[in-house]
Amino acid sequence: MTRARSIARKCAMQALYQWQLTQQSEAEIRGQFEAGKELEGGDLEYFSELLRECSQQSQALDSSLGEFIDRPLEQLDPVEHAILLIGMYELASRVDIPYRVVINEGVELSKRFGATDGHRYVNAVLDKAARTKRAAEQTK
Image (tube, rainbow, N blue to C red; front, side):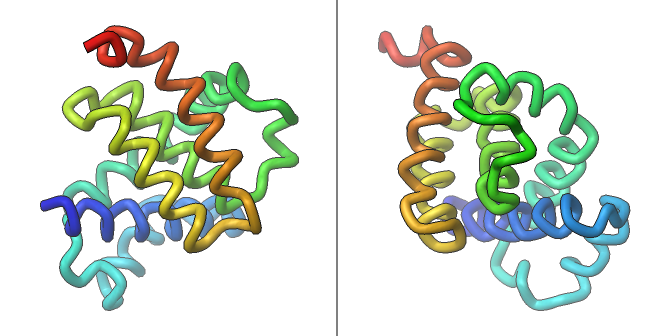
């Protein structure tokens, strides 16, 4: 399950990156990923959820993200922005996923696909967001 979700997150990050740059519809991008081999071994249902919810809720997620970043959204690297959208969605809507997993998955994606030292920024932003959005979980 964990590896399948990690693959789903990786593909969702790539799909959200494509969505940001091309403005293609979420359905069109999902179809491209489903037809390709990128999702092999991945949790297709979770990929679809992440892509659908992050694209449909992007304005609300960006607004929430604005509380935790130190620059305008337009200055975020598109890869890091996609990772942060997923992280913000998971922190707010997927309380079944521990906040440490959300942060770790975001950091690992940014190490692999983001700019040099982008993982440090992603870690800092998601950590700040988790302190607010998952405060009760952190006291356990």
